[in-house]
Image 1 (tube, one colour):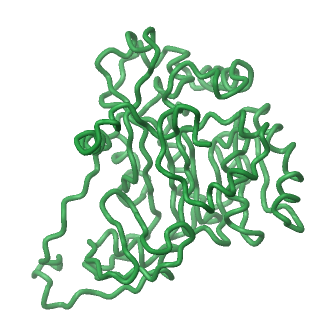
Image 2 (tube, one colour; image 1 turned 90 degrees about the horizontal axis):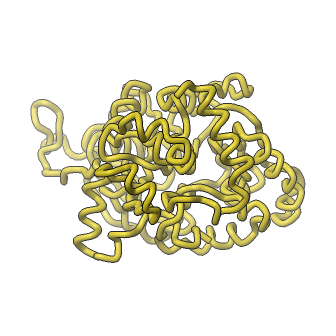
Length: 369
């Protein structure tokens, strides 16, 4: 499929055919969710009902430690996540939403005043732009200008995933993060699936094989992806199930960090100070690392560099481990657990612990709300 054809069909699908969440033909964006922290529930409850009704995302993509951050939402749609974030970053933070579907952008813009009044802000801390996430420069977005980039089940809709990640990397500040949920395939997809209009619009036909995310992230310059969550996707649509055959899909959340390579911190001990809203006593950073307030945790070189050079630095006490514990090569001799990278492996582990996970994903049969 040519890029322009994909753009046109996605715009038509999300701008004309889908009128509400229930119009989706597969459940890739409608699967079960973890409990939502109180401060996020409160932000969700503030979102205008017309904005929420046009929500087609994959899960709840709200990272932590957001106060005063500048955030860019790729494929913002009607603006649900943007408005939640505009409350969470506070009046001194800022949120920009970018989407190529003009009808969705216009709907989002329509409710700016409503939300600013709801939040009690003197001036808007949010704006929406009609543009392509592969071409953020054309939308006027400058280098090194955002703390966070989020995306909610949208990267799979792009015909050029590498361009999306490259642009996200460009506009992020050093220490910035791309935090995003998306759909991934267990294998490279055949052309019959990639060219299927409904499967593409339903976030399946354009899904990356999960291994390709690691390859593309490395090419662009990000630190290796950090897996945050993963859930199996069940299509609940016999016609589409027959089309995809043996291929399996998961919804997964990853975090990618833009950390200069010279910022290597070595093997390190860290202590979480606590206090991040919704994670006051414990911060689940990703599937491999969870930090309890006041507890000493040994972390590897990559994790140490991320914590020391990102917005999380003020939330941790960070100390290099004694040189006596280092090998001649400079690596920590303490045995650190092997990281889980494969979202399908994570799903299998979750299913083994809780069979109810076998038909889950990231949103819930009635969405995240």
